[in-house]
Image (cartoon, rainbow, N blue to C red; front, side, top):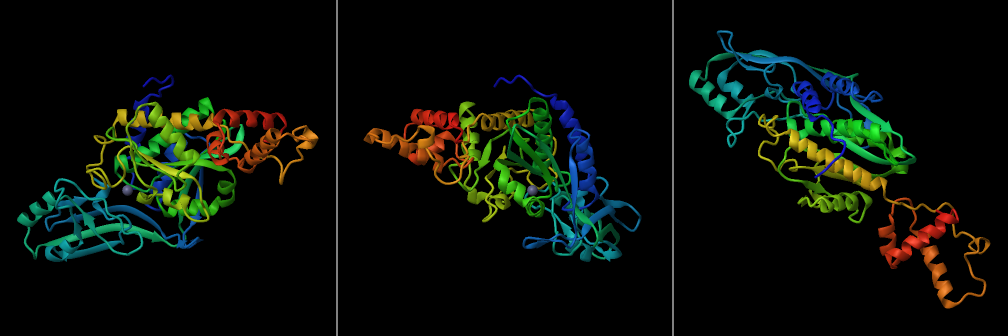
Length: 432
Ligand code: ZN
């Protein structure tokens, strides 16, 4: 695959290494710190705060969670688990705790993956208040050998919940010639895991920097938000703008491994979002796994939901929940590779460029235009001429600024060439 404008991928891997250790979550200072670092690359990144307790559609923004430190010490003062070594060691959104506890009781709050004994699981408990630590199963077995059921441990989780806190979202817009927008959304809530979804954060940043330089016909909107409740909050906040302007969109998740390409289409199968992506995959001879919309588990679900109806698909390399390192400490910089990220970047640039070169006619008048005044309606027409008029009128019926020429061709059942000619006539007469 040839590409003229490849960015220096090392810069982005280094950016990733800076962001990787930060403990992110649904809310909190880790997310703000991450967004502030991104602002160094995206100067117009606007960081908005949605207050805790605010109702967003059917959800309520939870109190803001922050964590300073967490550990478990044995009686001799040895730290057997240390949050500072890996933030996955603590269940994300753990309640604070500071107490002495016997090993047999502590074990109820220790979580491991028996089937992946070398890795720490990534576990969250956003809405059910509890505390817990995560560790590799191998390490748990070692502890079981070393300590007795009655051995005493000191557990400490220095976390806090702020009722008057907020949920942070970053957004940046690059204005195009057209007000119509392509939405690029990614989630920032995962702490130290790479493919899911540090890769999405990096790719979104790369795309911003690319289109800042090379611009696109359509306006581009980039958003960084915590998964699910973040997209719900963002849709709630920007409902009108999104509804009025978004013509296509992609949720970028798990885009850094160099194994597969995966695509979760938006709900409306014959759409600009889906057609453009699939065409680019085909043109570049890329084999990809096409999922059904029903396989969604990320923000694409909210964007496509009833009444919101934004045409947003998800682009992934190996889809979330489908790779073995998923939601474990094994999802590191061995999974997120330079090659993987670079190829995702190339494909996404091509998809956005493909949309930019797509004509989306939009009828400029309400109701039927007066064609006679424009010399487009024969007074004493032959049958043929009347059929031609019918085609013009039908073309306008589907010129909603969302259908491209190929879709209109299908919708009004004519040849593509004829559709192009009709477009030219209507454009000349300023009807689209
Ligand atoms: Zn995830």
